[in-house]
Length: 225
Length: 211
Image (tube, rainbow over all chains, first blue to last red; front, side):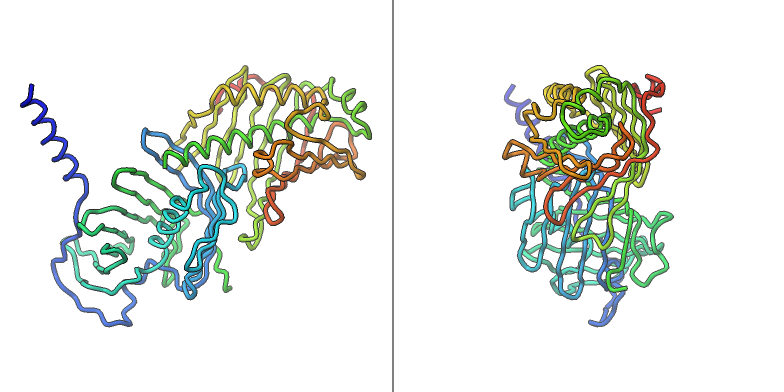
């Protein structure tokens, strides 16, 4: 009986450790100068307002669809975001300008933990990492990799594939994958732009409270136009 | 994220109540007193209408527009269907409430429509369809000039979600022109009804599934 418990514990540990892949291997090093913009292609360079339908997949197989409105200013770093039901009932409304100000949050969206997590996810999707570029190069499958040091010992890989789609991968201080963002231009994206807007964003959060968000673009409006 | 699901469910239940309120109000005849409204409500058996929903937010440079159609059959069958930009259907029939939303990966059903919430909704619709606005435990109703009814939540918890609801009646008895749901000074939803048909036959199958 004791052996069975031991086996189960080893199996559990093996599964836990195998769940989070590490950073992408850089096969061929490239050195970028500071002004090289290839690593910044995923990020809007002007003020934008996006409306997405957001499909959330939660633990236990539960799913929900919401509408998300996000206004971004890359120059100032200001983010405004609203989440509402398909019927238009606002469940969360906040602004980030270095600090988070919550205008409206219906329970249980009314925690600062939720607000921080949401702002962190938006920043990961739409803003380049704050930290320095620490490595760059080409992966085995030909993708361009830009690796940044981020806050709290974390690391972020910007992976730009040959078909111009990109991934953003965030790792914790132990180099375990904690966030993965994948993109798809679909038929409604703006692939021809210098900083194209994907039609679909798929964000997966790994770890003890896993979730997945699929954002389908409904409307993109350049606010400075 | 598990909490998000609870919030979504709660918000949807609140909005389901509002939708039913809207449907209840669309039945009412043009009237100046609650007595006349009560008298006009008894003859409505079915309603079908197209709607355009404008979401106004300070963050939006112009309103976010959704379109759809709804069907109602007395006493408690409802199909509230969004056709664009997100396809979503709320179905209520014989005590069951279901919601389906179209996504890029197929149609998903929201299975968290609980029966307790449903009972509350049915109690509300019974009051509204009877024209008993002044007896409604959830909303205080006032009749204002210009064929306008203002509904204000009585419960503090509810008023944190909805400040007030304004209903504007059409010149034609039985037809409502628009509903405005105010969440705050800069956030409101306007639903404008067109092509309203009253007491036309509606096939029951529309309330059973997502055909």
